Length: 119
Image (cartoon, rainbow, N blue to C red; front, side, top):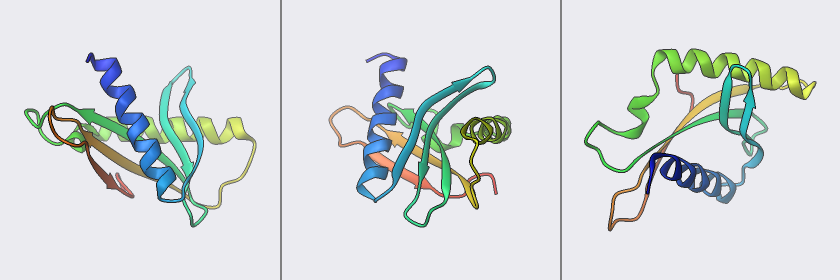
């Protein structure tokens, strides 16, 4: 499985995880000139959540969520503003979450969801 396929599988697993938890997916792989948002969802409390998904096939380079850097968080904030403007709607509350997916051969995928990253 290549890097692109691994990333897509991770996003599929993250989406299914959120839906099972009662979240409504608003957008996936939303793109603009500045980049891409992995998942935009509304949690059961009505908060619009911008989810950054990081998928790895091993822990050799650390857990997946360690890949969300300060620079990535700034880009995520900028992309969130672009997405909100494109929707022409008002969100009372927004949040940024990280979802780490670890897909190791011979094991069930591990999902780590960290609400409020970069706060």
